Length: 176
View 1 (spheres, rainbow, N blue to C red):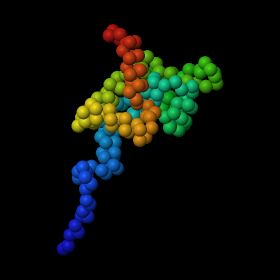
View 2 (view 1 turned 120 degrees about the horizontal axis):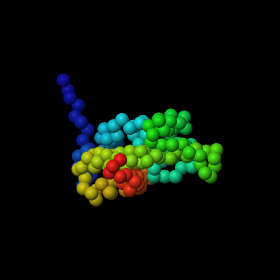
View 3 (view 1 turned 60 degrees about the vertical axis):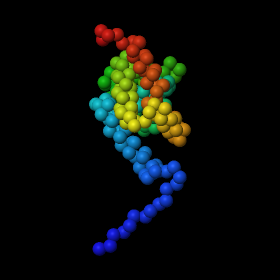
View 4 (view 1 turned 90 degrees about the vertical axis):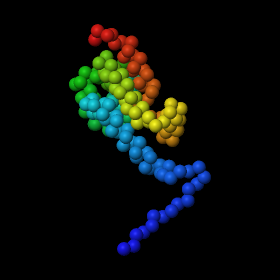
């Protein structure tokens, strides 16, 4: 029985074994992200997609449900069902757009704003757990480089979470 030897590749200066397989690294990071964030989000309506939608509703200004769907890259029919479920959960409302009453804007309720603030904290904790091997400067660099490589993220951003967390903490009294 003859065994085939694995092909040997010569390492470049400064390279260590297994460090330049971008696909494997991105896949491992994505799998870890999905697992941790899914656990953090729990049974939120529509899971990560519902959370991203809520972040966009709270953090950005979209003139219509259709514009929101386009911003998030979600089919308009799917967006209708998603928003219906968020409305049923008391997290958003459809309101006439004051600039064009034929359109409906999706607006977060106080309950929706508080829910997103809580989810932002949980997602941040899940991301920190995922990136625990990196120090703070490396985490910032990773996010900056990913954003540079892919363009800005459409939904869960530090700015959206800062907006919603600040708003929720200002409007949420301890007696609620």
